[in-house]
Image (tube, rainbow, N blue to C red):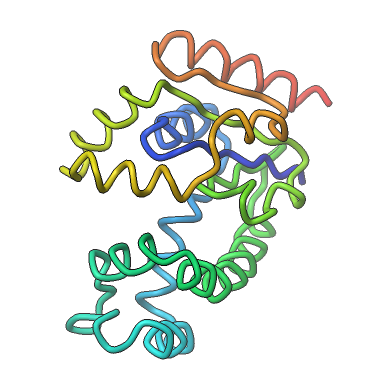
Length: 193
């Protein structure tokens, strides 16, 4: 079964694109969502996270997302260590999920697909892009982050120019009709190859 990597910077519209593939009947694995579930429900993972970040990493048995974000996005070394804990667990979970699917291909949506070398396990990659100001407005509307918080997160991801060099397909996600058209084109190419 083909694995298609789907990525893009914060606020680019990865979720919108993922939902359009779901509407085509393609299973989509949202790595960030699954990682949060694993961090909340896997005791072994919780112990490793607490060892790295301290007891503030969890509040009332649930992931303290604000504390973790504030900690890891302001210290590249801690971010690197956190990724080394989470990514292997998510990769194993994805393999189990993929093996249970019955379709021509599956999509693995991951914010840092290129940064963590995850694209090497994909048959094709799709990069979703949008102008930075549009991305910032989307994120502010979605989760009420400050401009500075969003820019800090953008700083920790590769720029679109670097990602485009590795992407098989690029979707400029500004106008929904154009995005939908491009997705249908990509779907045809993937299912015909």
